[in-house]
Image (tube, each protein chain N blue to C red):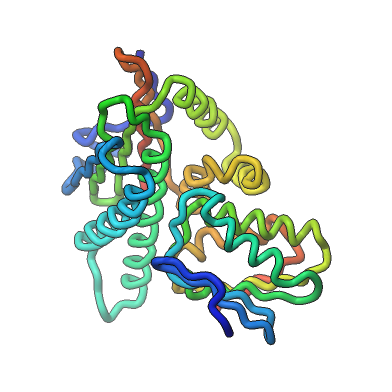
Length: 195
Length: 114
């Protein structure tokens, strides 16, 4: 069974506002069982830095225009933060016994960037995340944000990354939950950032 | 000024004269557990009076780091004995987006952006 929450797009879609197809993109894939989590953790930051640099290559930049430089640095920071959070979540919650790679795909459109991160996880963990996502999409993001911050001590800040994307970066999120034939779930989180 | 904690890409400096803790660099630690030494130092640094947390040199902070700072601010708010100032930088992307939210947790917090 496959369930979608929010407006989930495929790279070939022209976009919900009809902005045209994706122009550029790339995908990174990691095997959850190749090296211990501690070693892989460093890779999240390296990959996020790389994706942020990659995106800014395609953005117009005028050295004489401070607004364009500010925008450049703002988008670079947003891509870095979002990619890092998606990778951290995917690494933390990947089930090593399930032989599926953890992936992050980035697609550029004229006025938006689409991040799609996927990992496989155990059914119980996948279901708990599904319930959190439901709570997140049904409630008021600002209210949920303060609540998550207040609850950070008990929850370890879990879920805060997704809430900050919505609340602080104005991103739109969507999910795909798929039950796997061999047990467990494939969880895909999609983040659309307007630029 | 003395450096009290250092990692691969970050440091925490403490100036006892100005009671200022300065976090610098890039912080992407895994979960609250890995942030525990930083959290412990900040909480023990000043039992009473004024304290400044200088984040201007902190270029990147992940959500576990934001959770750590939130937890710290809530503890300071509940303790009611510390007068806290947070220094931020407009030039650092995440600070303009997320740092302002700390003020929502503690109305008495003084936030200065330079």
